[in-house]
Length: 116
Length: 112
Image 1: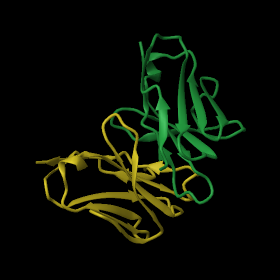
Image 2: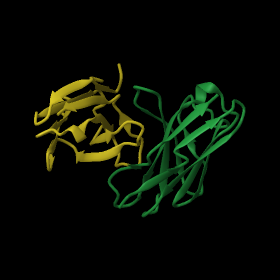
Image 3: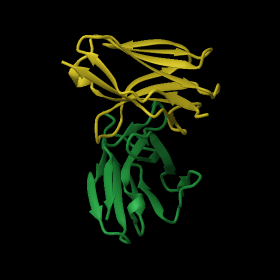
Image 4: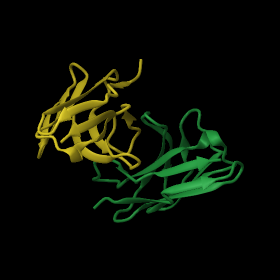
């Protein structure tokens, strides 16, 4: 149980284009989903927290207009990197919290983004 | 000073060895402590979850929390090559759905 998927697992795009990453909780409903970014040899850095049906809460220093988050349903959240630039190249990981009775977040497999 | 400190390693041990992984932290409000295993280019996988101080055992894994010293540990007994991964400690002052602070991870290599 508690499986979280991400799609795509790998994406390469040209600078200036937008990229959408999907995060799905496959066997549970997630009241809250989180988006993280991880640079090589560094820890996970929380970008934003999203609750179904409401606006995402962004961490300090994260541009909300650049990283658009939509938590459309209790099983789906999307992260759109708008006008991507090479410095946005990173490993993006989502996690989902099952809600009441859940112990902790469950992570997706991650999406590797390379902006050329 | 970082809220959570973790030695990045790498740590190389022979197969069958006992591995000790550690983190220290500065925020005394942390109540929930987790260990995640992350294979290369994969998302973190929850290994252990503990609340407050004490020990928790699950198979070959034992998690220890010493809140008085602000120190947590993960022990791996009879280590296997498949245990080779990066181990992340994580902690929170609220139950899982709130902001979790991660360590930088310790890279472990178990040599056959």
